[in-house]
Structure formats: C-alpha cells, structure tokens
Length: 321
Ligand SMILES: [Mg+2]
Image (cartoon, rainbow, N blue to C red; front, side, top):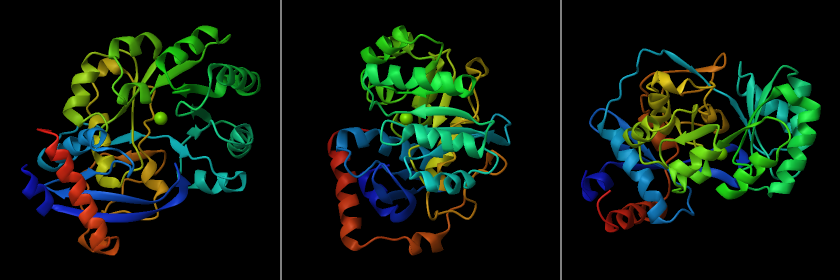
C-alpha cells in the first residue's frame, strides 16, 4: 500500500486498560482497513520510527492477506498477570477463565507475594515468570533458586530474566536446578538468532515487532525449540494475527502450549464484534469483525490523529517497508 492509501484507510482509537500495564492506562491503536481484512499498528508511543517500522509492515500484511488456519479451531492461552497490587490478583485472574498457566510479570516490588497469591488462589497453577530483562544475574539466581525450593515443579519457564543475552547465558550456566529460559527481547530487538538459540529453551514470537506473519514463519523455519506466540497488549485485530500464526505452527515446533495471546482481557474495551477473549482456557481461531460503532466510541482527537499520521509518514520516509 502506498502512504496516501494507508493514511486514508487508517482509524485511530484509544482504549482504556484495566490495569496499569507497563505504565500504560490507555492503549492508542491505529487500525488499517484492507478490502477484506484489517491490520493493527500499535507500537507503544515511545517507540521510534525505526522500531515501529516492523509493526507497520505487519499491520499492512494483515490488512491485505488472508491466512488460513491449519485446521485448529481453538488455541490454548495463558493468563497474564501484570505487576498489580496483591489485593487485585484474584480479580485479574478471573478475567482469564480456565487458564491454568499464569504468566507473571516480575522484577518489580512484591514479586514473591504476588506469586504466592496466585498459588493461594489456584494451588495447581503452572507459572511462567517474565522479568523483561530487569534482573541482574545475581538477583535472578537468588530469586529463582528460592522459588524453586517453594514451588519447584510448578515453574514452567522464566522469560527474559536479564537484559543481555550474555547475562542470560551466564544465569543458565549458574542455576543449580533445571529451569527453561525463554528469550523475548533479545530476539525482537534484533539479536542474532544463532547466538540466541545457544541460550534459549523456548522462543517468544511476537508478530508485530518481528514484521508480520510471513517473517515469523521464515524465522520459525530455522528453529527447532518450542515457540510461544505472544502479544503486546493489542486489540483483537492485532491478536488475530498472533492467533493466525499460532494456528499455522509447523509440527516440528511442538509447543509447550498455551500461548500468550489472551491479553485482550486486560483491555477495558475492544474494536470487534467477536473479541478474542479466553473462554475455558482457550481462544477461538476465527476472523475478527471490526465494529464501526466501537471505532467511533474509542476515536481520538484530531491532534492525536495528526500525530499518528505523522508517525506513519515518518516510517514511510525511512524507505520501503
Ligand atoms: Mg516478554
């Protein structure tokens, strides 16, 4: 699509979040209307044009391409627990009915209390921890080893414990018990895949920051460890791209299901008639139908529209997508 066409076909919305997720209380999203499909362009506001470019490529791909499922009707998803207050944990978990695996954001305050609260509510839960690279090797090691003593067999994996790949490798070598390490940021911030695969036991794949479903499929071709397709707090339009990818994963990447695609549950509203919300621990593999009334309900001011149009223009000015 040419720039003018993209701008003409773009609708901007702002959807309140239910919790303060990464400091975000409203999620601004640009939706691009294709002839038969929609694409979501929603890099966080602070992302610069160069990083946001992958997201735009992904959005346009989704708007102009129909991806078929390989026959799956549902995919399993985990609950996602942001760093909320302890009193709010039960409420957040209730937004993910049937999700026995809980991905818990860690690396801030009260991590252990929050984890204990999850097990108080669901003693049989499996947990995934996501530190977003906030721990030093020593902090990660101390925390994880004491957690292993308390909840050992319930730990599925730890995602991006430390910032750099070298630190994550060091942690892997120093841990005194077996724990899978999932790599997220080191991959989507442009890390070398071969180096990453020396450290990662699980790879987190996010469609938008990696430039779209086709790019992700090409990358996955080179990977034989389990893949967990995940999201970045998107509306159901963005999530549907993740679902389309998850439903196409080659058999060789036997995944430690569930995927991290249940996050529409963290938004106060949505832009489609059939939101991709978890039911019975799963979300349905289906085409989403954008609701024009909701686009209107969540529409933004003219100045915000202008800001987004400029953002898209800046990306086009960097060169071909
Ligand atoms: Mg992550």
